[in-house]
Image (cartoon, rainbow, N blue to C red; front, side, top):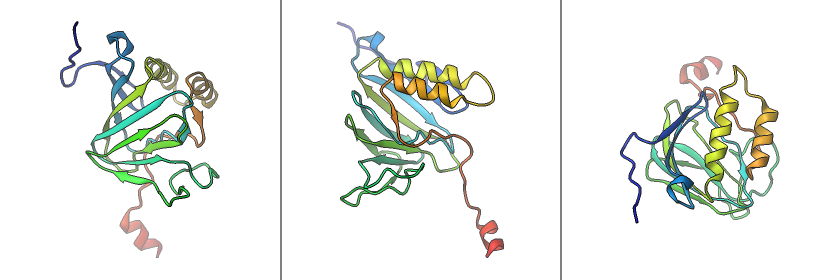
Length: 184
């Protein structure tokens, strides 16, 4: 029996304008769990969503990410950042060493609201669902200047992603102190 070792910086890499994903462990290695290293650029918001069959685990390696993993009191609006659970849980700003486990059916999301890239380890069960998803979303993101939202919706439907709020990417809306002072 042989295991699988992937040196630092190695692995199959998919790069788009929205994110960078490096495959570390896949179904091709005999694993039932897919493992990826993901660079999340400033402004990327995966949007709140659920999976009926999948479980996921996220571990922040560098930078900060806003994390959500609960059923909110209300799923109203197109933004999840202000959601609250019946128990009072709210979105967490998570730094290096933080993690999030998402059981099947649990609404969840992550976003990089900072001006620096974040890096995380992402595990998804069962493989190869997310492997195939990442390959196809990279094709969609690489087709031109704008992303076809209908193509993304169809892709997500095929791979057990029930979208609640929109996927967004672009520069984060950061407030600059000088601009705020001028407006006051």
